[in-house]
Image 1 (tube, rainbow, N blue to C red):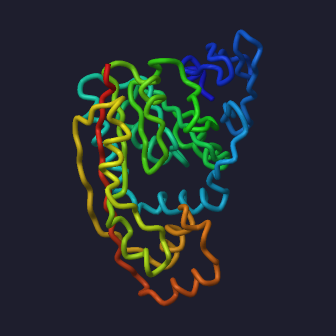
Image 2: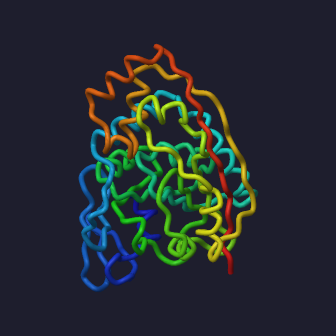
Length: 280
């Protein structure tokens, strides 16, 4: 956990500012949080029963992202972040539900002085994210709950294929800050819905996003990316294993289904990037 990031944090129990002392974060009211040897810190306010990504899911996601298959998405995200920031480069970028830190690391390359903080409920993901970039820090946090950041701490927030809590994101963003949301289109990975049992993207996702954000944010821009991925059998297995569909899959049946597909299978990557500003 980088000391430059600690100044943006607050205690999840009492909301007092956190300070760094050796390998411990503490607030003035005596709440303490040890920094793990891998560099992350657990800032959960209370235990949660919500399902978080497992070690296997995180490993599959890391392998797929590192292979470059999702590079068009990551590069578009970085470019959109750069354009949204304009002349004022952010000093603090928060990735909410950011998983392994792959996307945050690329965005930080656009802003040489920015500090990055990734929040996720998955310890295996946060553990990886702590090493994703020299200027990235990570913490275990429930993104549905009160976020462990001070009011107006962040200049930019990322939310890529992840749950979001608009009132809390609005609270942690400064006036004039940027929220960048990436959501799947209905045809995203559509070729794998029947072939491999992937969960289908729900109808009217954009409309629901707008309704969810409306009381707190104004959408000021939107871009779409649609491209074709050429995935071998290993990559297809990782696509399934890294997402929520993996909870419902029998490994032997999945392997059988993948074996029946062509050696290189064409799959649609289709997403929307929505740029938002906080409302007064």
